[in-house]
Length: 172
Ligand code: IMP
Ligand code: MG
View: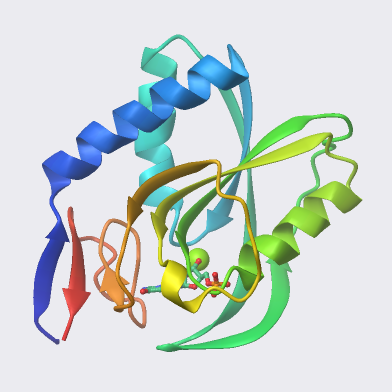
């Protein structure tokens, strides 16, 4: 295992998740439909869901899975591994992602959801790694901006490792 340096502590994450929930609840109101991108966003989403329900929101969600990332290199092409069966015609969607890097994944999924006749798609990403962006993507809710480093923890992995860390760190 490589050494992990703490970048964002669990307390900082907790605080930020509550701030994001408040902003989302204010804009969306009581009924919120989330589409969560597996696998990395799951830890963040569960905390966000709890924060939203504490604020009195009713949250529904679906899961999607794509693949593109092979170890440290982004392949650039996206495969939809798990799509959605739920109907989202006319729905306002909050798409939840762990980290935005090139933006290719979100660009693909946004088109996928619009193709299923979603009315509007807002994006919530825990981390924004802007340095390597290839597709212009508007991220409506950002947890933290991160430098151009490989980050892990709080659901985010390196080769399936480190997802269980309670904080976000950088591997050397
Ligand atoms: P994008 O399509 O290049 O924006 O990549 C998004 C996906 O790449 C994310 O959902 C992550 O799964 C993965 N990814 C990007 N940067 C990192 C990182 O620093 N650590 C772990 N996974 C990452
Ligand atoms: Mg991902």
